[in-house]
Image 1 (tube, rainbow, N blue to C red):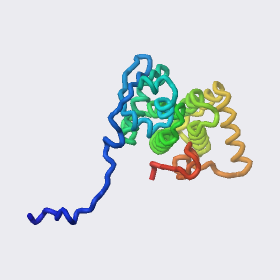
Image 2: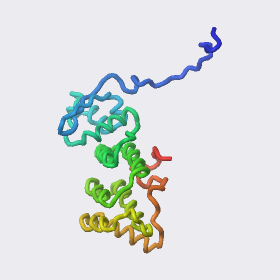
Image 3: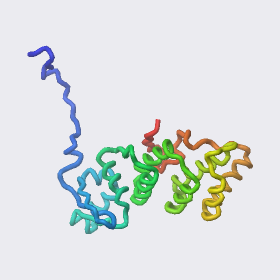
Image 4: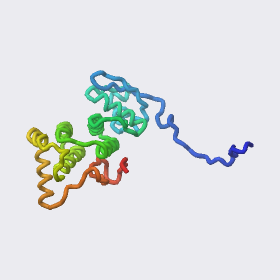
Amino acid sequence: MKKDEIDPSKKKSVTRTTFLKKAGSQTVDIRVGEEMKLFRVHKSLLCTRVPYFNKMFNSGFSESTTNSAVLREDDLEAFDVLVDWVYTSILPPDADLWGLVGVYVLADKICLPELMDQVMDTIQAKYPLHPSDASDIYSILPKGSKLRLLALDMITFEFTKPMNAQLDISKLADVNAKNEEFALDFLIKIRSHMSRQTAIPNPRKSRSCTYHSHEDGKCTRTRK
């Protein structure tokens, strides 16, 4: 036996879950967006990672018979990121803010808190939000959305910083005039902290699950 070789009898037996075992060999065809772009995805892996598709392809729906589905109303780029995430658990490092917001909207639609929280951690850590961004987020996401809360907290925090040159007050006033729901939440937040005489914390430095959508005790935080 050569010096660098290991005696086979001394090798530890390690059972590794192979990709083929996780992904399986069966695929499903999903056509997305107005362009009806075809995504061919391993069924077992997709259904394991995304309960929404598990119900679609493993229940009594027609999709379970044809192993195909049409998602014409969904965003093509967001779905592409979703499929990439199903295989890698990683978000694209070059994604811009609104690309990530699109992924969040899709993940919210299909009730996928793991992906929502991963997107949230990335936005919270890397991307500035302006008043117009907050207004748009309010327009496309429902009341109670954690991304709405992050947008509100970011704008409120910037507003209360003394002599903050980064926040355009005229744009904030314009947003408040056009988006009544955001304006009301903004004023309530300011009034709450004023009445308690407490400073508004920097949402970027939060290490709690304030902005997460997962169930209690199921945090898979990606930020350090």
